[in-house]
Each structure stands twice: as C-alpha cells, then as structure tokens.
Image 1 (cartoon, rainbow, N blue to C red):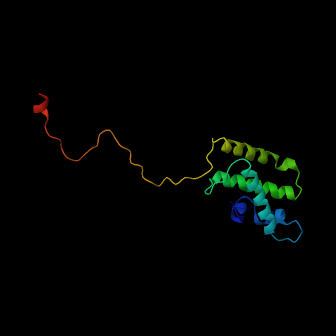
Image 2 (image 1 turned 180 degrees about the vertical axis):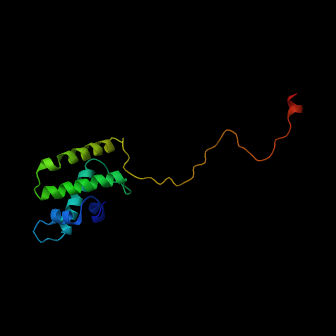
Image 3 (image 1 turned 90 degrees about the vertical axis):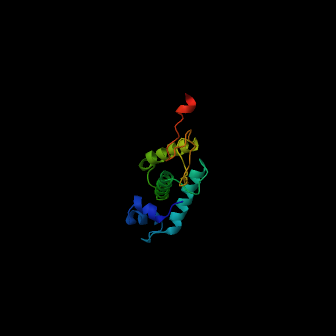
Length: 132
C-alpha cells in the first residue's frame, strides 16, 4: 500500500535510518521497514478490507502506523505514540462503519440525466390557432 517515498514525506532519511537500523549498521534496513509495513497493513485489514485504490487518508494512516511500528521495534516509550495510535484507530473505526470512504472511485464517465423538457435551437410553431 505504501513505500519508502511516503515514509520519507513524514520522516527524514536520518530518522528512517535510525528507526529501521536494529543492528547498529547505520544503514536503512529495508527488511525491517517491509515488516513494519506488513504489520501496519495487517492492523488496517483487521478493521476494513483493503481496497485496490486506497484514499490518501488511508495511505496516511498506513504511514503513521508503520512509523509507530518502527518506534515500537526500537523500544520507544508507548506515551510517545499512544495519541497517534488512538487517532488512527478512531479513523479506522469510522471507515469500517462507512462514514469515511476508503477507495477512490473513477467518476470520469459523463452522466447524462434525462430532463423533463428537451430544449432545441429551432422556433416552435404558432399554436394559437389550435388553442383558440
């Protein structure tokens, strides 16, 4: 659902390196990041069915949950990310109830509505002789 580019929008490269480096190699560990993304996606999937074309809000929630998971793996105190986790959970509950959309829909098709009267460019006949 997300990749490193979306994580780098929220974090700097140095912060991402610090959060993903569990062994002290001073390098970005892609396996740890992928594992955190999978954990965040699984958490989201426990609330809703993950769509093929998610909304930007759903991607942002996945990004925040991935960052929280990376912080959890680095043994950050829970108070540092508790509020963000509750915010994400409340948004996911609203998405599960259908109050917030979870998928972008292509509405590029032109919908032609039938009107009661069709307007034409020509002048109508004089009906005064018929009506009296």
